[in-house]
Length: 326
Image (tube, rainbow, N blue to C red; front, side, top):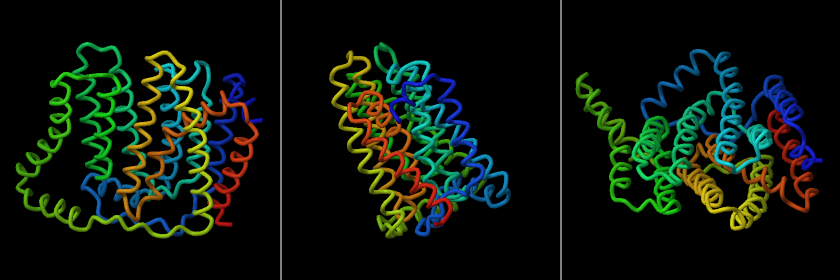
């Protein structure tokens, strides 16, 4: 069943995306009892939260549209770099199914705002392959990560994703490493100048001191339904990643390295989720996006499609139960 959908025409897949979009609109987002209220966050993230509180109805619609748009954007990146077949939006379908397990707009909006920047960074890192002078791409990739960390500080770990990309694509020049550090520092330099210009530098320093002082790895225990959903997702990820990475060795070198970059993005996402502490449930989309590429590949190229069919049905059931608070 699932493999037939992967092989179906793009029109059929678009109809499935429209159906999933309808599900997002007619059902509430997952009612996660253990998801923490946004606590200490960077000033830009706090401003986005305040907008969500001011316009809750608009925020819900915006979040649903962003989820669909980001899923299609991830699919477009995979197609552009030959990781996914052309004339297929199957990875976007997987991403939308995984994103059914997401909290309300108030808890999710900051994650989606960061994902917009991180997918742009992913695209630039993927473009490093074969480039003789990739200075602009390195700058773009690291500046967007730096700006994203101004929204959600744990996102700063994605700088390791860029550096792993240097090793993968054998970008050995010292200039790229220097530019990556400049791209990471430059937005914060301008932020300091802005606060200094407005005579608020002391206020900014106190905010970031509080962020560091109150940082915690403490994770709230998920509810039984959430725990089952996370365990199911983890199992699906492991079996799909094994297939994805095994098949990478059989691809031409350009595609093989880009598949490795996708796995690096997933590892960075796991790091950001773990660093988010009690807010980790709202940060799961950092992992959902790259894992959707792995699952789509495993379904399309695997021999035991029935395993994915069973997990798919269970995943949708768990997501709907979470959304309807069953």
